[in-house]
Amino acid sequence: MAWTYSRRVKYYETDRMGVVHHSNYLRLLEDARMAWVEDNVIRYGELEKMGVIIPFVESYGKFLSFLHFDDSFTVTVRLIKHEQVKFTFAYEIHNDNTGDLCYKGTTTHYYAADGEYRPISLKRKFPDLYEKMMSLVEEE
Image 1 (tube, rainbow, N blue to C red):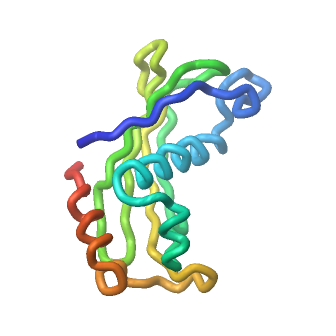
Image 2: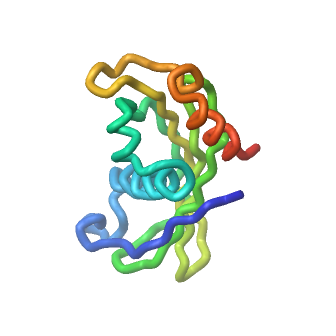
């Protein structure tokens, strides 16, 4: 089940050429990912209270078209891989005004003990949360 997050491009996210600066795409993905986690699993603040954080360890992305200031866009988020310690999301960003696919990519994260950044097994520490995440994995 593809999940979507939508909003408009903010002025500060654009560069001198009037397009969203490439560095801001990771922020757009983070906004969408955090909303996905909250909507499908748990509020991130609650996860942190449990002593779990999800650091970012890898990203891949391909820019295909442009987003400009005030464009409406949608990020499609899919959890495509989930293991005991790490997991990967796939994203597509579409310009709602033109229908263009602007960006396609992935990010990989791991479960860590808050404050220590050492990997933890979600399956061992929080089996119910692990099973919930496993139920949300989609094939590519």
